[in-house]
Image 1 (cartoon, rainbow, N blue to C red):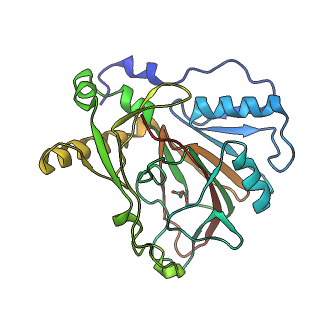
Image 2 (image 1 turned 45 degrees about the vertical axis):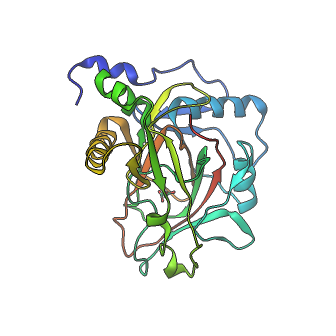
Length: 289
Ligand code: SIN
């Protein structure tokens, strides 16, 4: 991987001071804990503007020690856009936009165990996701996050040229069919399948980000299966380099808000038979370009 110090230029430098909120970065690549905000109370405009800035600069932001009702969680999500309803996962009773993330001693699996960007099989994949963890083990159940701007920036110029204009298939079928059967979910006849650019431009920051993930991306359009598999295997390995990552250790009452357009995440299920429970509100996005 990096042959020189040049790669360090990809990381966001410490930015102008924040006046309304406290921002403590986790790594130079990604992630920051935000202090001084009660998400259940009305959020003044100046505070909200700094939350938006911290989100753009850090790709995933974490708010600890929050006490959120489902309504307050959804209301915070709606400040960023219309809410998305998951095509397969179970939701809280009366709140279709509030996905249940639950693992206990009877679970055959946990959510999000491989690197992915949420529901990238949608034609308009989600802008971001807000996971509020209510219960978690004291040790274990961390989530890894990775910066896809950095993953793109650190490709060689030759590889960037190779990827220019390429499109990839993102398929929900192999991911979702039967996935939630143990929770009583009946499958839909069809799950979403879409084609997106391999490198997308973030609509707010205008930076380029790698947009393939090992969860949903099955093929690169126009390449032979061998070539497509080889290229995807390379990209999946590259984007999982620790240099691009942070690892977040949850405490009950923490809300994480990540940007699916420029970050991927992976949940670690290392705490069986303990229980981890939370809700995810997901914000609708637009077609990648
Ligand atoms: C997810 O992919 O939304 C689950 C993440 C987690 O449980 O940490």
